[in-house]
Each structure stands twice: as C-alpha cells, then as structure tokens.
Image 1 (cartoon, one colour):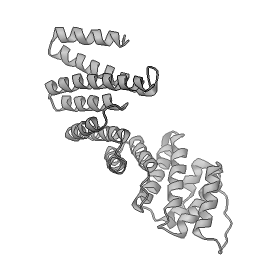
Image 2 (image 1 turned 90 degrees about the horizontal axis):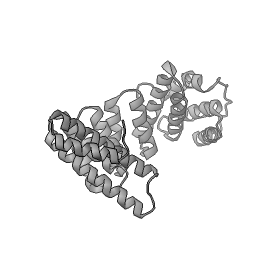
Image 3 (image 1 turned 180 degrees about the vertical axis):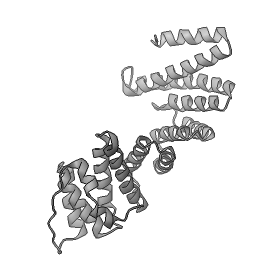
Image 4 (image 1 turned 135 degrees about the horizontal axis):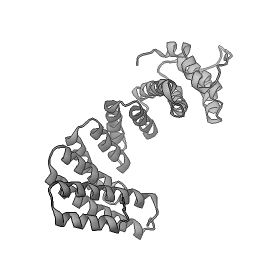
Length: 271
C-alpha cells in the first residue's frame, strides 16, 4: 500500500472533499479502536458521512492492522466516487481501492469486497487488477456469477485461452443458470479472436441449445418469460445468433445464414 494509514489519516481531506466539509473530531484517550470504529460504523449506516469518515479514519490510525474501518472507508469512498465525474471520481475510486486492498491483505475475503474491487478496477480501466480480483472472487466463491465475471476479466486482458478454459469449466458446472448462454458466448468470441472460426461456430450452436434448455428448465419452476434470468439468457442467445450471422456472411454460407435470420426473427430481433 502506497500510503501509510497514519499519513492517510492526516490527509483525510481528500476523502472528505467528496463527502462534505470536515469536522474536528473530539479526542478521548480512554477510547479504544473498537469503540471509535463502532461509532463511525453507526454513523456510516445512518448516512452521517462526514462524521463517519473522521471516526473511521481515527480508528484506522489507532491500529494499522485493524481491517474493519478500512472496509467501511473503502465502501464509503466507493459510494462517493461512483456518483461523481472527472478527477474527483477517479480520486475517490483509487482511495476506495487502496482501503479495500489493504483490508483484503489483512484477511477480508467477503464477496462484496471482491465485487467492489472488480468494479473499481473496471472503472479505472485497470484490466489486470480486474483479473486479479476476479480470480480471487471465483476461488473464494466458486459460483456462476463469479465464473462469468472471470471470463469477462480474461477477455479484458486478451487472454483468449483463459476465457475458454474458465467458461468451459463454468458451462460444465452450471447448466441451468442465467449465465449459461454467456459462458458459450464468451467462449465463441475468444475462439474467433484466435482465428478458430469453425470451433466458434460449433460453440455458438451448442450455446444456443444450452440457453434454450436453461430457459425451459426455468419455466418449469416458475421463472418464465419476463424474468431477469430469462432476459439475460435471451440476450445472450440473440448475441450468439448475431455472431453466427457474421461468420456465415464472411464464409458466404447462404443456407446457414437464412436459418440464423429465421431464428433471429422468431426471437423478435428486428434490427
């Protein structure tokens, strides 16, 4: 971490600039880091942002290995930065990453923290940072959404083999998830980047079948047309059809192209 927390506490004006005017905090030598943190945490929960910031910074300065205030400060800075534009947005997102990365190094392994770190890295156009935390998130929480994000992260750094490996594994582990179509879509796109168009074509065809099966399975348990899960699957299905259309145009396969255009029309795609 570039800045020591004690210096960070002295420079808290950067955080406060996005959250409101600063206020001189009272001092009490009998207070513990836990009591100061708990006061700051309650202030944060009740949206008293400026007071919360000062108390959390105090708690962090009392013990550089105390991760709880770092977590709150990371989320606080993220909330402030994501609402802003320009230089202040970047400043607060970088501060959020600094606090959350320090907390992660001290053992904070919650999915919410990894999600925020991934989002921050994406906002800051740090593709390798995004991949770093997407990997950790998928290792710690090996669920369907984390695997999808891992594929996106590999794609962002142009690691096509990483995309294929991670998304193939995901497609085998999670067969009736809203991300099923996305797994195959990302695999197919990676194959296209590797100039393996025939493999991409087979992948998209398999992905469309997998998406259809997932949608049918969801309908049986009451998550039918109109649900967010169905919408995601349908969007990825259409995306794969459009990529197939591009391939068929490139290779002048008229019969296959006509079939894809019929499928697109049946799916309601009119662009």
